Image 1 (cartoon, rainbow, N blue to C red):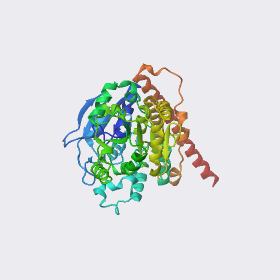
Image 2: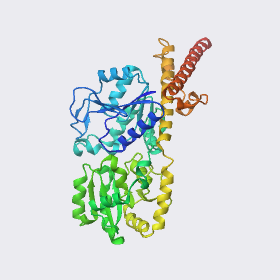
Image 3: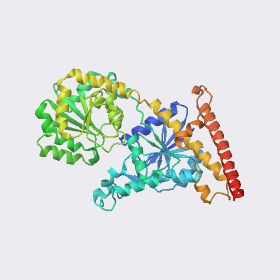
Image 4: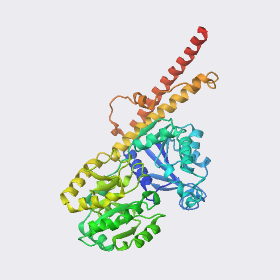
Length: 474
């Protein structure tokens, strides 16, 4: 397949969405697909430019977003992008945002009559405070964010979400499109402890003034209000009271950074909290090795890739109980979960005072995260693509077969297509070796599309026959 991934954030931005896109692109390319990434330009640019080859990345002209700085936006339609997608013979579009680039993806799919899959990464209702720094929070409310999500997500051919929590939320919003729950995969190898030399880690510890006898509680990721890092700092006095040799290391940058520094100063724990700033993505694995345990108080995560990275690095994880992590963590087995921040100090003390317990959490965490491989991720997304293509062709065939007949009638509107749980029968094919590369995958897609078309055409004929019988009965 030729796949276009459209996003408003990509490297050098460091966040869960960029990591997910990069992991997916590489894994799909290994399976023989051609993947092209389209993202907003980093600076003002008058033309679409190709800036990378592995995978190919195209930068779309953009301008600063006035309402949410420092993000960039673009026009919701691009004729030049449509021409590029047509030239690349794109089979399916995969959007990763609900905003400007997401709208470009939708408009391009409508122009070219292509199936489109959308990944819903972010619970938008938790992020309305970013618009004009919260000055319009009484105007742009979480309820408005829910309505916007419902409207947007009912347009694509299918949706991908990382957890059941997100799927249930979208259903509550009123989204009726097929939803596939596919946890983001992770390449665990860059985070494995065996990749790093002890002297290299010791040098990094020395850079941040970490002494050998100290235990490090690591928080890594974007430093923003919804990550609730302030609640971790609130507990630092209690943590240090029970475990005097513990310090908190915060790796990352973001709009809440200065506020957290002021908070640490106010609580007189500046010497116990280390602000390392942003780290290059290529070196993230090394920074995980600085920690003895990983902690997060966030409840806004749809999946939380930093949890997976920390587990791959062999760190015991301390996290808040939430629907987004219920499928990943087992309290007391591969992590420690808390309901209230007041429990954090006791949990930290229990982990650090018993090395055997900490090692058990580490071993179980590594075993758990091994099942979330990038290869498994790509296989499941590929299946969602196949289902979307089959559904798109099926709907197209029904429309063509009923032009001028049921097209505007109530009966046409009431036609029920096969639900997503039953799409799998379009994917049945003879066992064949896919190692033959792109041509083999293309053959499978074409075969499924043909089956879908013929099935849909027969389905449309049955509708017409039923209509005639119904008339005769009257």
